[in-house]
Amino acid sequence: MDFSHVDLSPEDQAFRDETRAFIAKHVTDEVLHRQLQFGENFDEGVHLALGEAGYLASDWKLESEGGFSPVRRRIFQLEIARAHTPWYHWGTTSVVARLVRQFGAPELADRVLPGVLSGEIRLCLGYTEPEGGSDVATCKTRAVRDGDAWIINGSKMFTSNAQNARYVFLLTNTDPRGPKHRNLTMFLVPLDSPGIEIQGIRTLDGDRTNIVYYSDVRVDDLYRIGEVNGGWTVMRAALDSEHGVVEAEDHGLQYIAAMAAHGDLMAEVVDAVAAAVARPGPDGRRPIDDDSVKYRLGRAVARMEAALSTPGMFGRVAVAQTMRDVTPDLMDMLGSASALPTETPGSATDGAAEHLYRLALPLGIYGGTLEVFRNMIAQHGLKLGRPSYGG
Ligand SMILES: Cc1cc2nc3c(=O)[nH]c(=O)nc-3n(C[C@H](O)[C@H](O)[C@H](O)COP(=O)(O)OP(=O)(O)OC[C@H]3O[C@@H](n4cnc5c(N)ncnc54)[C@H](O)[C@@H]3O)c2cc1C
Image 1 (cartoon, rainbow, N blue to C red):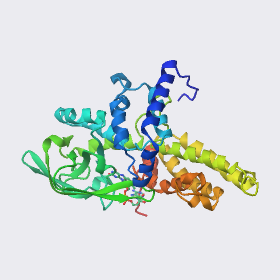
Image 2: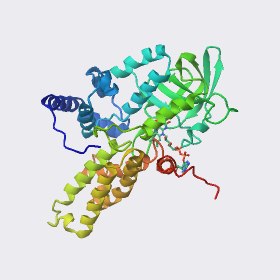
Image 3: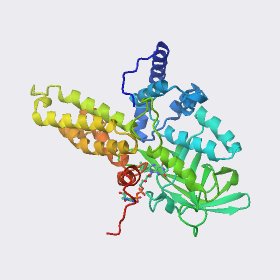
Image 4: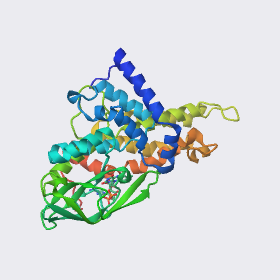
C-alpha cells in the first residue's frame, strides 16, 4: 500500500473543481434538511442529476470499461462524502447491478443496466427476514415454480430504500426440504408487482428502512438471477463485496476499511469537537485546558485514525466500534448542549456529535453485526476454525 502524497494533474484538479461545484449546486440546504427530516439517504433530484452528468456511469464502470481512474474515483468519493450527499444506497444498486450482469439473463441486464446508469432505476436488498438476518441462509420466503413463472410468499425486514427502488434483489427458498445453502434462489423482483406491500420503519438514528410483505407475487423466470437452488453462489459474491473480503487494489486510493464512508463523518465530528473545545466559554476558560478533556480528545483522535487505517473487514469492526466508544466522550466534552439535535437552537456542533452517537448503534448492525464480523475475522481472517457454541 502506498501512503505517499498524491499530486493532482491540472486535468484532475479541474475535475475536482467541477465535481465540487456540481455537488454544491445539487446538494442544497433543502436537500440536507429533507435528509434530516426523512432519513432516506436518497434524493431523487440529486441522483438523477448525477446520472445525467455521467457520474453514475463513471463510478460504476471499471477504468478499463471507461470508468473513473483511481484518482478521480477517490476525488469523487471524497467530494460526495464531504457534502453529506444523501447517497449511501448507490453502493447497493451498484453491487446488485454487477451481479445482474454476471448472473442474470442478458435480456434482463439489457433492461436494467441503462436505467441504473441514468439514475432512474434503483435496486435494493431483500435478504433479512423478521425472524433473523445474521444467518441469511435460514431464509423462509418461498418461491414456488408455476410454469414460466414463480410465486413468492414471505416477508423481509429492513429492505432499505425499497420506497425509491424499482427492483428488490430477493433471497428466496426454493426447496425447504433441501440442504442448507443449496435450496436458495435469487430474483430481481419488480417492486410494482401486485402483492407487494412496503411499510416504512424509522431507526434510532432517524434513517428510514422498510418491512416488505410478499403475498402471491408472480415473477417471470426471466427475473431469476443465477441457477435454481444456486442462490448461495450469487449471495456469496454479494456478501464478499459488502463485507470487504475482496482483494484490495495496490494503488492505495480506495477506502481502507469496509463500510468506511461513515468513518469520514466520524473524522469530521472529531474535528468539530476539537475546534469547539478550543474556544473560550462564557467564563473565559477553554475546555481543552482541562487535562481530562485533552486526554479524551487525544484518545478519540488516536482511535479514529487507527480505525480509518484498519483494512477490510477488520476496519469495518474498528470504525463502528470506535464510533460507539468515542461518541459518549465527544458529547461529554461538549457538555449538556451536546444532547440537543441538529437544527435546535443552542445545540453544540449543531447536533453532529449527538447524531454520531445515535448512528453508532445501527452502524454496527447493518451489513452484518459486529459480533458476526468478529466471528468471520476469527474464522476466515485468523483461521481459528468455526465457532463452537456447545459449551
Ligand atoms: C438500518 C438498517 C438497515 C438495513 N438494511 C438492510 C437491507 O437493505 N437489506 C437487508 O436485507 N437487510 C438490511 N438490514 C439488516 C441487517 O443486515 C441485519 O439487521 C443484520 O444482519 C442482523 O440481523 P438481525 O437484525 O436479524 O439480528 P439477528 O441475526 O437476529 O441477531 C440478533 C443478535 O444476535 C447476534 N448474533 C447473531 N448470530 C450470531 C453469531 N453467529 N455469533 C455471535 N452473535 C450472533 C447478533 O450480533 C445480534 O446482536 C438492515 C439493518 C438495519 C438496522
